[in-house]
Length: 124
Image (cartoon, rainbow, N blue to C red):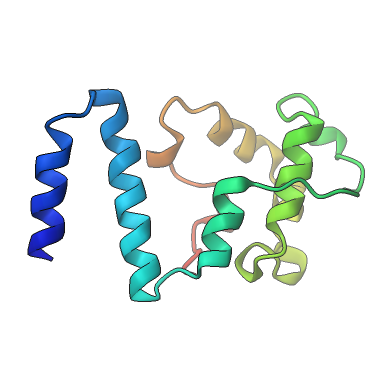
């Protein structure tokens, strides 16, 4: 609590504005890992975004805004249960609601924009 806030307050004074969000994210993720709210394996997977070595062909509906490498990375995320829930897997929702995902993908501040329909209720 208090020590973490004090360290961050002291640290951010020496950071460039462009780096403050990165450091705040790193600190937050480390706190969540230590608290057990996030598993280290999940965090590593999200940060490293490994490529699925044998992804299925990319759907035609996503070709105008995703490249093959990004598609393979998305497929790689499906080893996490939250991204692979039967017909509601991440890649299935990309295929089914391509226009919604394309709009979200093109957002300048996607982190604050509403997610496409199928992913608005993610809680895990």
